[in-house]
Length: 199
Image 1 (cartoon, rainbow, N blue to C red):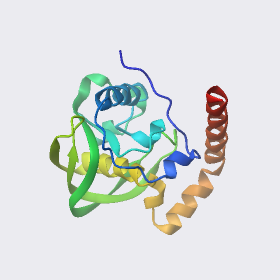
Image 2 (spheres, rainbow, N blue to C red; image 1 turned 45 degrees about the vertical axis):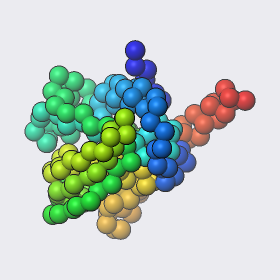
Image 3 (cartoon, rainbow, N blue to C red; image 1 turned 30 degrees about the vertical axis):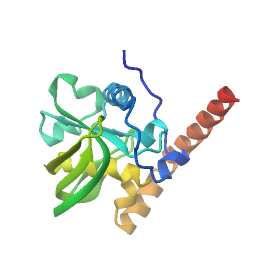
Image 4 (spheres, rainbow, N blue to C red; image 1 turned 30 degrees about the horizontal axis):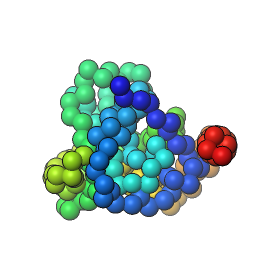
């Protein structure tokens, strides 16, 4: 039975760390299963290991059988039944990029906050390993390419609003100052609680 993992919020230092390569593949299938269950529970389209507190180069990305606008719908409006493909990418790297797209992004670690102006590559090729360590390759474009780039950024300690042009980034941070400050407070409280449990 897969377990739900606590999602780390904006302000947690793990979200700004560069994740380390995965060298040990034992137990990764269980971690991936828990991450998938957590992503689906919170209605996400992707989830990276740093978002569940692990600075490792691993993420999952979901492809839904929906139009792009529906895929961006509120979490509870995106049924699990339309899940088309699920990718678990370990040690991923983009080997080809082409074109440009600008679109809407949010993040499970920054709940309820979105930007419509996030620039990404339109087409990508990504090389990665599966949970057994086998090499894989995937070509993606449009919305799936956006999801993969967003999750790969998490492995570099980059959040979606970091990709905004400078002026838009300033506006975004100003507009969402109170929500972001609240998340930082919650992230600190969670870390204190975690430390107390371990101590």
